[in-house]
Image 1 (cartoon, rainbow, N blue to C red):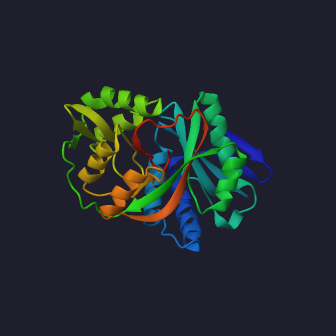
Image 2: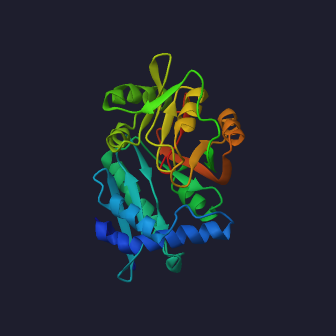
Image 3: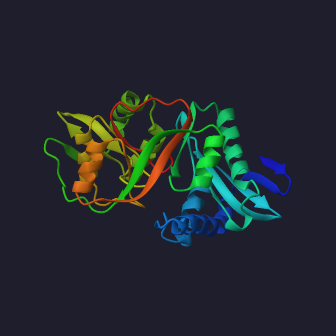
Length: 290
């Protein structure tokens, strides 16, 4: 697609666009986080460039870039691997703020979601970022859950009665059924890929699978029957990947367990959604997408 509105155009991203978009994304996140006293979500521009290169070439993601006066000034992505689609990361060159670039990048992926018949769209927003919150709210996104991003190393490495192991392909159906019970839909595409990559894990209790994680970290999601199962999955992880895990702040039992086991809150975030949303009937950790 190519959408012209004044001097700003939006088109589908190509893998080579990551060379321009990586530094833009890093600088955009670093600037807003620093302005509010929070660490950047990414370790450096090279890491973001590599991430966006993989995203821009991924068949399950629809990525777009914005151009202004002939140069790339921002990007956005839509994860289409579930009936619920996830947005992000979205970033805009700080030098072209107040020109509607962010709204056009959001409109592009929202139009795509409607065309694909998505049951809903979700995203995770930095709670201190008033501008992005206002944009998403104005586009119909509702606040669903306050989140706490936590980092550190868990002290408790085992949870009695629970066994954590690497997920296998044979676990896929049972994990998807669990996701349906907790959320009303599954994320089988992500889980299947995580199993193939060797990052996924499951917890067993009473002789059956009671929780799974694509991986314990910023870009992974976790679903479990209970807080006990969730604690076992977190405790069983060698380390929290990326910028940490996103714990629903209203789940005070899980949050206090994390704090009591050496994790620390580094920033507040917010899960927002449009379309289908069921209050989860279990324990869960969203990814930074949803």
